[in-house]
Image (cartoon, rainbow, N blue to C red; front, side, top):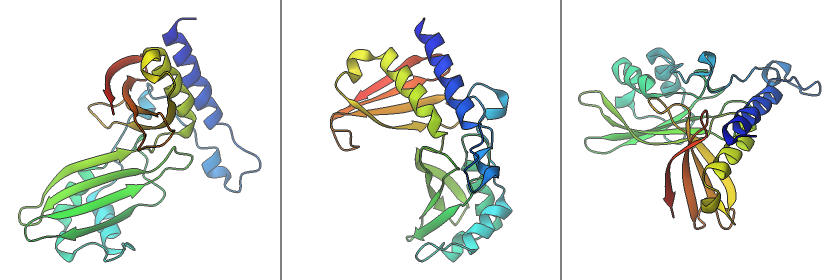
Length: 215
């Protein structure tokens, strides 16, 4: 079977299993939530928050020291909301937010994890309160369906078998637009994030290797 057909089959099977309700689940609403395929229009990443939702989360933050008062404005909250993408455009069950300010700039961390996800999404934002300028300092996005891990491994190992030989899959990160559908897939020699290894940038829909970084 051609590599791309195999990857497509694994993606379909993995996501089909995600959408199958678990009769023993204590929360049937979450367990039966359909997980769309990455290539379908219904699965496109989206920005589910508006300024009002972010401003409320800022005011209700339970992080130590919360969110600095100078960041709790409608203008800044709207700008923050514009930077927050989720894998399928659905809001996280719980949004966690906190920040700190220096003399002229502030740092704001926003995170959340969808149900049945491989991990949490984290955005680190730099904010200039004087002009409400908000920019993304870094992201660490693991909020894709955990059932995709098998397909991501298959795609990475088919695209770069020599690069991952003898290494262990440890995690993957999804990328927000304009790179939707692309994933950084991490392999390490010791099965841990700090071990020597390689990161592969994979287009999951096509199975193509777009980039690789040896550590």
